[in-house]
Image 1 (cartoon, rainbow, N blue to C red):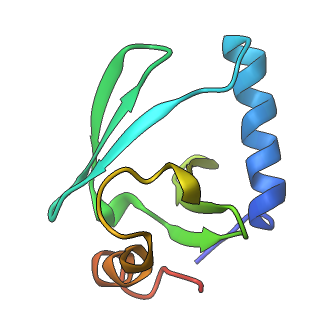
Image 2: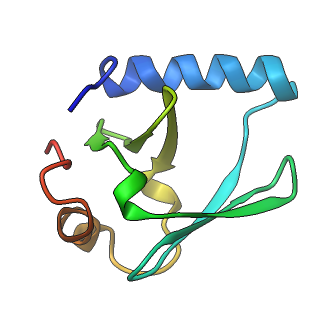
Amino acid sequence: MTTYGAPARVALKIAKRNFKKYGSEVTATLCFYEDKVIVHNHQEDSEGDLRYEQILAVRQSPRLYLLELPGKTALLLEKTAFTKGALEEFPAFMRRKCPGRVTF
């Protein structure tokens, strides 16, 4: 598994890239299901499916979960932003969906 920096450093790189592209921070809603994650990008008003097999690594910082994707991209999930489910159950859920790729 290849990772490309500590979660906080990766988050900063992504934020800078998104600000350059959109002029603001990108916001997205992620809905986790048994077979996929549905990602709704609010800036582009677009939606896409993400298969768990596409997630290269799942890491965390004190405030974020980071889902690393191909092409040096990542999805950042603020731990305070979960609206359904229990935050405490997320690591175990991701370990089941991404075996061997959860690094905490």
